[in-house]
Amino acid sequence: MAGIADNRVMSERTIPIIDHRYASSVPRIPEVPPAVGAPAHDLLGRKLHDLRISITDRCNFRCTYCMPKEIFDKHYEFLRHSELLSFEEIARVARTFVALGVKKLRLTGGEPLLRRGVEDLVAMLAAIRTPGGDPIELTMTTNGVLLARKAEALRRAGLQRITVSLDALDDATFRRMNDADFPVQAVLDGIRAAQEAGLNPVKVNMVVQRGVNDGEIVPMIDHFRGSGAVLRFIEFMDVGNTNGWRMDQVLPSTDVIAAIARHYPLRPRSATTRGETAERWVLDDGSLELGTISSVTRAFCRDCNRARLSMEGKLYLCLFASHGHDLRTLLRGESGVKPVSDGELSAAIAQVWRERGDRYSELRGSAAAPPASRRVEMSYIGG
Ligand code: SAM
Ligand code: SF4
Ligand code: SF4
Image (cartoon, rainbow, N blue to C red; front, top):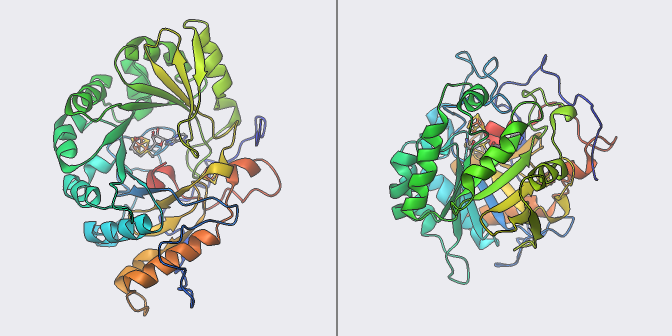
């Protein structure tokens, strides 16, 4: 198993980094731009395929493993609206990425459904075509609480699928984990609305923390069997600096599968696409497809084909990065830099991707791993 640091405390809760002024630099525009349409490969030969776009740093939840209340409290300074990329700017960056080979866009946050007019952004992104004229895959990750109200409009705007996070079925456990007193029923209503709107198959993501919600694994299976949803179990990750991550709270996916197998016979399924993060499983009676995402115990960096764009226009090449590439300065022409043309933007992004060598999960716990300080938070970069 790659990258395990047994029982080590990886981040200290005592000195969290709590602002968004993460280190960043303005990407350089190469003098010789890459050939138009040439796919971008990084230093490890990974081809750019996905772009995750975080559209807000705000959230209505305070999940204890993501935005702990004692840090993301009323004194916490969220970004001002003028600091966020506008929908037009997001669409321009997304079009550039698609021209460079991206086939899939995922909207995330914070909580993406809190961004006003998000349906308009979905419509703008849904209109993007690949250089070959094909539609792109367009999806979203949400905590689901506003989904009952928004699912139909999102679908009509062109969203194709949705992932809903849900960590427990037991209401008390769920409220404790979201730490904002939201009932589980609100999320279940959202999932049902998404299914009725045709955003199928809905994926349901559960972050499993040993001793916190591992008792919910089997109840979640009982509930989602026969529902048409896909249920995925995610290992608790050491992202950011504020969630007090400890290795002993990680329940390895192998243990999750063993726990399920004691109640339901299941078998593995092969991956559908290269770079897919989840290992796929199916209950023997075919009533539920499952996934396990094992970024701690089974690193998948060698196939990692994702770039991440923050709400303020910084491009990150890894979930565990502590340095971003400031595209907003290029787009707006801030700080004395002149605004770039589409060709220059494309060349700058391609160059950033070509220089990428990130593989944090493979290095976790080794001397070569980048230091934990100044890592971007999950609520900022969106998972
Ligand atoms: N607010 C939305 C939601 O919760 O679905 C989108 C943003 S959230 C940061 C994206 C995903 O990251 C969620 O599925 C969440 O459970 C997951 N996540 C957050 N912190 C995590 C951690 N420390 N380890 C593993 N997954 C985490
Ligand atoms: Fe909000 Fe999602 Fe983070 Fe929970 S995991 S605090 S819902 S951004
Ligand atoms: Fe990708 Fe970084 Fe995660 Fe590795 S650690 S899979 S490079 S995001």
